[in-house]
View 1 (tube, rainbow, N blue to C red):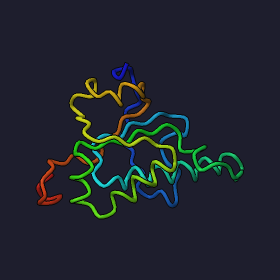
View 2: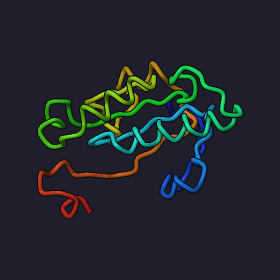
View 3: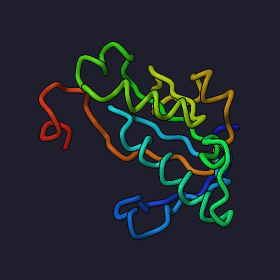
Length: 142
């Protein structure tokens, strides 16, 4: 059930170069409302780095430490590609790491989204960057 209890968090992964990611490697994460997917790609990289350090630096498949991560956007891929030059690179990085990427996900109606239902339950649900979808940038989103 996607409405099962989950750990609410206000932590972000700002300052990851000097601090561990606040999301545990064994937690299942749902990221709602991505735009260029750079935040989720950064999260994926950090979870892999943290996982390697937890294993004593053992090298393994690049997928073994990303954990379960579903990164979603409200807009479709074509729209995102017209707005964000690096979106394809971020999505490729996520998929190569074993994360799942989905488009057309309405964060106000997660129950109706098949990909969300298929991968539920989630330990942590993150909605970091509320955005009105305007081409006029961040100023219009705040």
